[in-house]
Picture 1 (cartoon, rainbow, N blue to C red):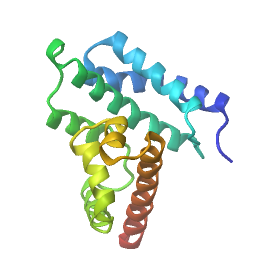
Picture 2 (picture 1 turned 180 degrees about the vertical axis):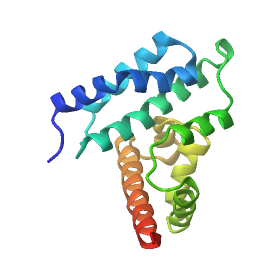
Picture 3 (picture 1 turned 45 degrees about the horizontal axis):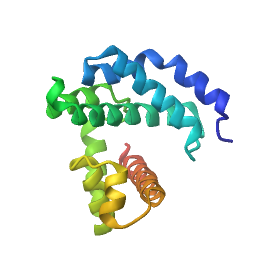
Length: 172
């Protein structure tokens, strides 16, 4: 049974310091980090998303606040000094909670990405490598914003299941 709005907000506010810190590391601006935390909390209860458990919620929130921080930084790049993308990736990898060694998880993800259809890989590339917002992608591919969100959500779910299956099949 999915978490209700009250449980979602309770879990997010319990993790507030950690989530705001994830944004602060990128932004170096405490007020902006707090604003982004509030945006993510608001999205968690106003967007059409559901979370089956606390882990799924916190994983989504961590990724969301990191993406929002990077988007915020891109929009204000001339005004701010942030960390280089390679440093952000190292920090992200260090902070990400993994039950498997990073090498095996990354290898499984690469294998799973190879099995994704070309159009889906293109969508992922636009979002995560080129850094386009979902709104920009929707305009670019001629789809609605909701369709882009749904396609990305499905891709995330498929990739997670694929990676989990590959890791489970290689566990000694």
